[in-house]
Every structure is written in structure tokens, then in C-alpha cells.
Length: 219
Image 1 (cartoon, one colour):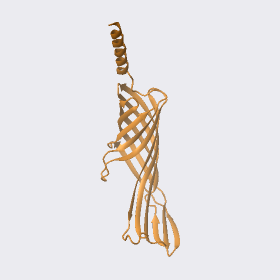
Image 2 (spheres, helix red, strand yellow):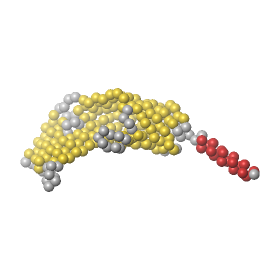
Image 3 (cartoon, one colour):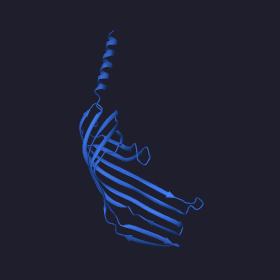
Image 4 (spheres, one colour):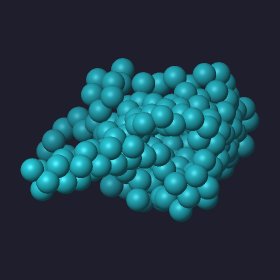
């Protein structure tokens, strides 16, 4: 009977310890996460948009760095017997952000935070039309450099110790300024190049509420 009582006390103590286990990150922890867009109007059902690293320099404060890369490539070949005749278009965006998060509330598996981030944007694009190996045209119209700045707030839900799902809302803006455009032509094997100054910029501001699934691991 005494042994049974001791075993019950040990089991009860273990259960209480597990119930009180903290899922919140602590100073010195590092987490990495991937952000997915679950639904896209282009018909793609799932695509990765951002890779993020996060370092906690206190129990409530974290430094973040984000890397994003996306793009599209389309190539049309009118005759499969002559694959050197084609029209090709590509475009995409490279993005690098740094930021800060304040984790102001956590309860059991839930962790709420707010902060901000700022980053560099590079849009790249190109078009090539080729009639033969020594007759083609190419330009990089649509290329640009810019920046973004956002205030953020989000929630992490810890499925297990170190493994979490999350969502985030951003409020801010992006601005990309067009760069000079290069036009290249090749006629009968002779190449020419012309650079043209392009003005204008692409501005976007407001709430960024894209449905994103965040999956992360804390070490």
C-alpha cells in the first residue's frame, strides 16, 4: 500500500509538471519558420513565400530576418521541331527584411506579439523573342529596386514544445522604383545594345492580410 501511494504521488507530480510546462520561447532561443500561401488566384494551391529566422535576445524580445524569393517563367515554342524559335517571359521578386518583435502575452500554448520590419526589394523581369540562333531580341523591362516598411502583429500557437503554427497581419507600404532598361538585339549574328532611362515607381500601401500559414520550429 505504501509503494502504491508513493507511485501515485510520483505520477501526480509528473502530471502537474507537464501541465505547468511552458511553451513560450526564452532568451537565447532561435526559431526558423516557413510561410505558405495556401490559396492563389493563379490556380496554384500551395506556394512558399518567405523563410524567416528569429533570435530571442530576451524572454520577450526577438530580432528577425526574412528572405523571400518568388518568380514566374513562361516559354512558348510554336514548333517543337525547331526549339530554337521561341518567346520567353520571366518575372519575380527578391526580398530581404530585418525587424523586431515584442512578445507581450503568452498563455499555455498561445503567444501574441507585435513589432515592425523594414526591407529591400528587387523586382526582376525579362522578355526574349528568338527567330533563330542569330536573330533575337531581349529586354529587362519591369526591373526595379525598392523598399518596404511594415508594422506587424501576430499569434503563435504551439502544437508541441518547439513546434508552432501562426498567423500575422501587416500594415505598411512598399515602393519600387524602375531601373534603366536594357534592350539587346541580334540580327544575322550582329549584336547591339541600348539603355533607356525609365521613370516612375510602383507603390502599394495598407493592410496586408493575405491568408498565410506559418510553420516554425524553436531550438
